[in-house]
Length: 459
Image (cartoon, rainbow, N blue to C red; front, side, top):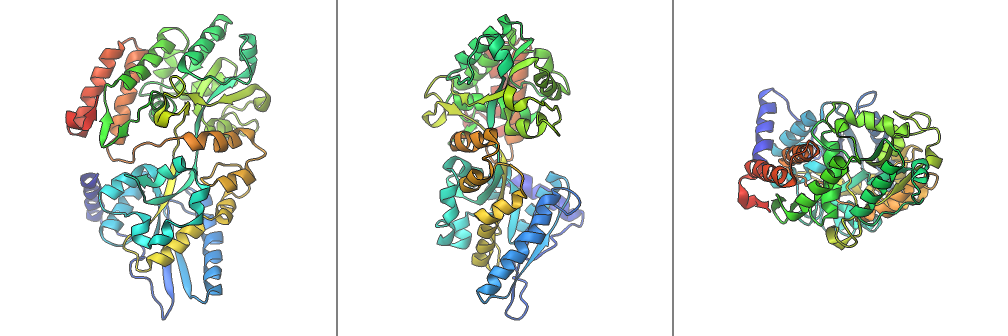
């Protein structure tokens, strides 16, 4: 929120840091105009692919397109390659000082915090009606637009995103007499499958991340999708979810998995428990694993994965995460998911806001989005690009077609990370044997202390 960002900005100013560029003075040279782009990427270092794409593709293409319109426009890239929090603080200082680049990369989870601080404004307020009439909106699912939306207003254009699903081992499912494809339609059907797998001798029927050792993976891969499946979000209508019926149902599901012997509670307590769960799934010891498409692309990828599975394409299946029961999910959905990702925003202090919008929308065009992939199969925010580039990977195509239209995002507020830890602690408690009611009550107390009291918590 505003105080946290202000303190961070003052701290950085005290250290003598300052913005490196000048989107707000227009960079005029004669009749020419200078626009600036910044992101936490640098050639040869952090997020080098983004830096190289910006410098080698975006800038020359955009400048040439502007020249063809008879305009003298120069674009300057301001790279960075620092810790994310350091980058965030620098951007906050730039914007607070009415300086900074015209087009700015932000983690989607920072959008609300920056908006509340007044550092960014809705796109339409900065660029005018052109922002709302952009052709690309029709290519981005409404749910994915939520990555750059705060309190119903669009502040940024979403970049790449992802989605959570249930991965399962087809060979272990056959051993247990379970169907393939597997399409569970309720939490009970997941538990029933786990019981059948346990009876068939599978060491760990279900792995759903829990506890603080797994950090944000617990929240994003487990607790938040389950909460969405129970019809609630961690933050909605100006209040944080407390010890509600939905929260207790989530903790109850965890308890049934881990007290019923369907999951391994020790994995949830170990510092490298998530890595071990990856290895055990690859070894055929875990049958059902809740994870993001990162798991498919980078963990069990047959050649270069962290825990490669040579037979991945024939052995690993994937299914949507069901709501607690059909229709019980958020927005009345039968299935749910969670996603993450980054956005690009406009500096509200830009001297040439409409031209800055042309640059921003150009960077999110189908051509530019495809170019940024550099031939790799990754999920973008645009359905037209996904349709063109994901055909050779049915799993990623599945996420694009089936998951993104129903996904949700974390609340982009400063206190969220602390609330997330409280949620992780609640899951750890029930996995360790604490009753659901006790764990929920402790979570409620912690959240109230974090967000300013019970008036800001819905329970």
